[in-house]
Image 1 (cartoon, rainbow, N blue to C red):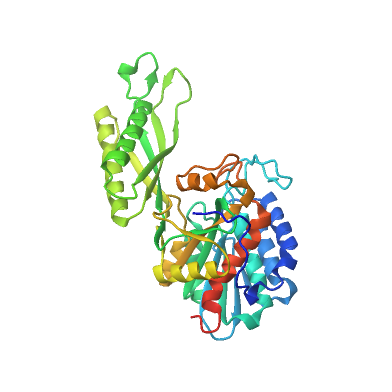
Image 2: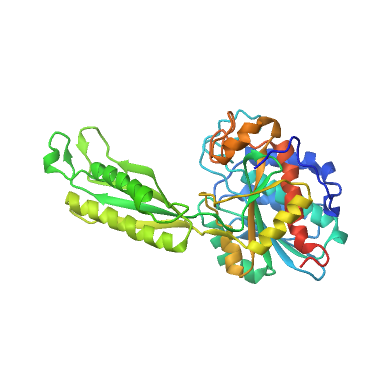
Length: 426
């Protein structure tokens, strides 16, 4: 992974980019507005209204449908015979209190665009405007999906259940992107598995509560929960036989009301990340076995209850289509980096291509100004270490630099889509 000294320049300007620079001030304003008004999954009403208004502006030709999958927006632009290309952006924010100090920081207490979905929406809107403005530069049909509720893993399933593939043209390829904390303009992806499958598990442990002074009369669910957490870490570190390794994280433990009371129950929330369907099945079996065995050893009055929820599919890039996207990005002047292994983060984008039975490609693109990186910072990024002062997604301090990021994101979408939409590009 290397950082260019300056923002990536377009080496082969596409006709689709003509006039983009004139509209960048508008897209900066749209981005600032979206960032200041974050909305959680399936509550993206204001965001969806903004998206629909932008798409309908200036007689664009986009056929706009609101309320898909609850709060999603789907827009279709037809431009003669040719491939159907689906472009997707997610819209939801996170329950995070922003701490960036930006003058356009969130106005909603406890809510923040700390994963960059406001960038995704703005970039796709910018690409949509360019496609509508230059019909002579491409042929085919574009389906732009502004998806709700990615953060819970429910949004893609919701738009599919609401007839995405039946009500709108069926795609021949699905394309999507995600901003991240590396140099603006850089495109990061890989063929095959790109992002982990993820599952959340809710574990209810039943103990026998009582006075803190007489633990011998009780079955302490807090001690049981602590034992289970340590055992699960041992499983992930020593027993999971796959590479990349299975990841099990305890994200929450809820129990008790006072220091001198041993509670009756404890609730443990777990996150499981896997990179292979067999690894996922074996991890589920092992987690359940460990929890039940520890509970039995503690002599709990009732067996534990284990419920899985909010699943994310494995994100898998079609190798041939990924090669085309990478080649198109490089031809447009964007440096690219092919990952040696998948990210452990998760996405629900892959559900769209899987349901449509078509290739899909997802990539990450840089969202930080180049001057924030020194040469050794790039080496640190390879090792998973962020440069000083740079926050990662989901942090209350995460803030992409819009000046270099927005045009880079728009151009990358146009380059990737143009690989299929250019005359003869199917």
